Image 1 (cartoon, one colour):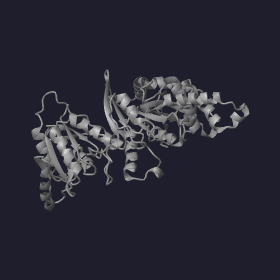
Image 2: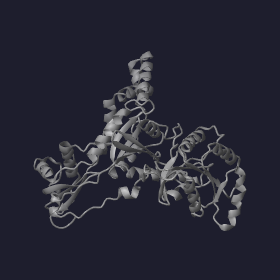
Image 3: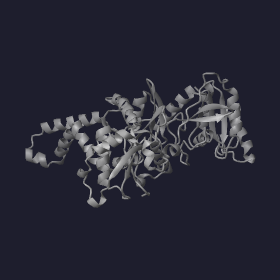
Length: 501
């Protein structure tokens, strides 16, 4: 409900740099390559006691009919429609271009308060150059340097002046938690009587859900389906999404912030700086989320890169739901190949030796959800706790299953087991069945749950010995069997009765 300010302009004039300057963080990827920003990005600026909702848009070239520029223009028009004021950015060090003139004509037709920020005016000597841009017909012209913050305060003062005065219904805009803040886990020093401490979790009013995966697996399509909007640009071109795109959705009394991240590539496959930065930002947004939706292309199956991305989520302590996308295409391709096989008049022996027929047989097998889930479990053994859902983001089939599942996983992530209940459970665990060498065995005196999100358990032992991985895996399986913790990793820490490891 805070007033909205849209930042628009042609590619590579410094819109994202100005956006980052206004909101006070590096939310948007910035580089020398034109056309880095594609989807619209939102942030919050605070000025003169007011919260301002800032929208960054991709570079607009109104007459370009290519898929990506046309989609960028469509996204920008959405931002303009919801804006209370518009800031058009031009490059003060380059000559006036035809796209600038065309865009200024479109913006003047909106009738909304319009400001011209002539960017890259880094010194006082360059300020007179800004006057040449008055030919665009925009009355309010401000020489600024987004990189050095010159002239930005004067621009905001004038924007605030034309906005309607705040009323009692204007609420503070939501500020996203940074990845570094969300990722910090402070480990307490555990004493023997720590099991009796009353450790309560901080209530969460919003579930952050990061959509992660390789390029071109359908992440943006899934975001649009879950939010019921065309929030993210969708195209068959891999790597279309660069900045992380987020959208807030309310379902009954629960808020979800869905974050569509850029496709994560192998390091050796990222050539442009924008691609490298998009991968870094994708991992940061993933680490700031509560739940991750790991999207897998059903036609290609689980690849080594999928396993690497899943490992990132697991190691960072995020809850995981595996989403097998394009399931409708898997079933259709299997049906087509089966029909082709039935029409063939070749012998059974020749069919068995033909690679195409072998592929048809394989696809008929994986088109069965139970068989495909076994394939997923085999390739992602460390995600045995993660639910697997089969959907078609393009058609919406079975995507309605995701919100209830996200709710369940978010609850399990923050579930706390009382210390007394944990120790009663501990007495019933038969540790003799754990495949652990005798020299690595320890006696667990008692255990307590020390943290949530992810659930973290502390074992107090009789010896200063690192817990054997088989022991830890066996104990984790027993905890899950008794208490659930669906979709979330479990952390187990060891403290000897006296001294430290």
